[in-house]
Image (cartoon, rainbow, N blue to C red; front, side, top):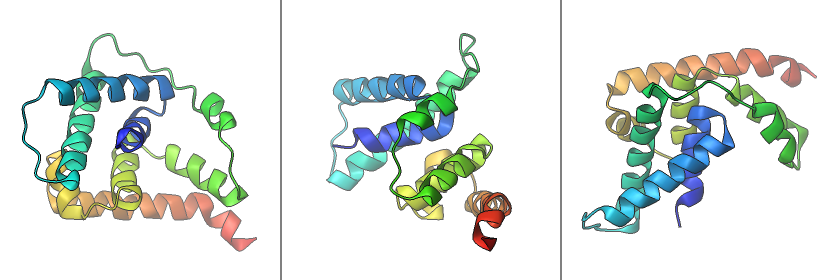
Length: 148
């Protein structure tokens, strides 16, 4: 039910679909092995996304992880109805990881800054600052398209 959400978080973290698939698999295995009693669908979703973020962090600091990001290859396989969607995708993927993840959780997963802060283990003010800085970077990158 929430596989796409977990994949999206992992893809925003790594910018690589195969790494994101690995994270999805690990998260779903953790779900199968867990004995957590979930209160609602929202509780399951929150738990899965928090585990996904933690798994992304764990993988990114592991010694075998290499930095190969075939973003262009993956992006060419996507189909957009509107050219602006493609430009936005590349603009967001061009942001540093710390901004991509909070942008995704805030705009695509509809989490509040307080929920994101708890999920990522940081202050709420840090999340708001990262969102503000990410918006400014996106505004600068996309400014030319708005002027047309």
